[in-house]
Image (spheres, rainbow, N blue to C red):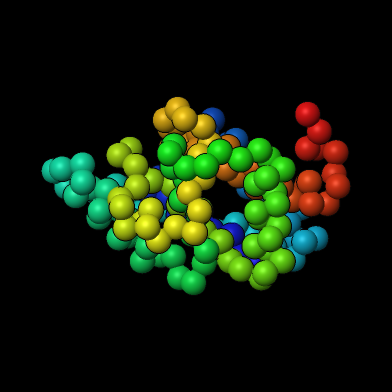
Length: 158
């Protein structure tokens, strides 16, 4: 199983990069035992088009061009909210089916309709709009949490 994070924009150096790297490294170390490849991160530039819809459409097209054959999970505030255990169950099913998965993080305007339509699943981390860097951190932490739950590790305890 291969995991990709497809993101509009770059994660700047500093506290967000440090936190992301922490969970990125923890996930990659723990995932080896489950035969899951290290996370790959693909960043695309934000569109500079004049209208919101054009920006979203251009970014969607660029993200979809990077997708390959992976199952697409679009992170979107209008998506379905899952508990960590429900997220783990979904993630585990994808792994058991030997499916690669790509998590798409949109730009400041959100995802274009083409990307939403192509998504296997739309996932919400909450109804609030979150900054790009924080979404990456929370997603990567939840991926790490999922592999620890799958391994019966105590990290996942509330």
